[in-house]
Length: 437
Image (cartoon, rainbow, N blue to C red; front, side):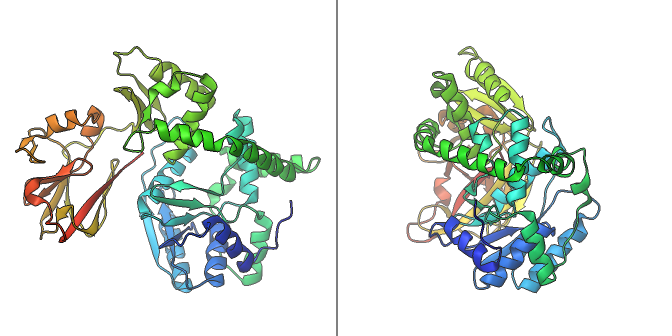
């Protein structure tokens, strides 16, 4: 496999290929301050300074030096002349372990950050791909897993791009040394208790003494990717047909036929939700314990930090944690509101149909019971409206309710009270609720 010499020019050409002619309103670069992401940020901005770049740093709250690392990323952004966003997340280890929990929390934060059409660039490179493929082989992956990390995939309302995948870590280190870059070495990268580090430091170097392991695994990933792509259109069509109007729930009837197709569709569904696919054993449990449960049952299957549930012939993936009791938040509609453990509420400025733009105070809270709203035909109990809309009970408890001066005026995805709707042609807010996966 021929790989071009790494430079800002070759990197930008690769990025343009991944963008496929799109012009994102903002290009976010995920930066930890380490070698790989520092090189990615420097080479991109140096090669095309006029593009809408911004850095984003995620503090997982797992290391005492994380604030210092975040400041280093902010300083890098200042030197490059671009904005920087710092996000703090809470990592709750579950069955998959701390590393997987941190990754899931990080990507949830990234997904909530992206506005429609924006792109997030991560610094995964060829050596990361080799490690990923080997890890998946050892865990008994299927064809899609053998394909490794995709260079492009949806993420929230935007896109995730990995433009460094063609280049090995050595090429990035050579660039950093040639340009005099400084970077942070995270001591966690030397922790052999983590599977990836164990392979990187102890196993792959020994395999490379006898076999062309990097070349072979990258070639294997390429073959698997081509084979997987052959059936992608048919699988994508099947997934689109099975998805609910919310774009998240899945019709269980399509999983009751061919078991092999059902196992593949479950992997596609998790990828659509921006989550790592479940293992083959977990997918079998989903089919047996959720899809195959008796018709009158309300099955619940916990997978790590999520629960799979079935309701009215559809399957839902929800956070395992219960919603906070008595949650109440002050809100400025001009700014996104993050509801811890629940999701993110945004108010998009539009003209025409939507919520009237009124002076505050605005508040957001969860259901307490007894709420009423007029969506047409008079004020009715919100509980009854949610039941009629077919919203599952566990989602009703997690829906944010928008109040203006103490009065319920809107429920995202459900409707706006008739007395608070904008006059056609006038400024309005369109409420967008992105639940946490």
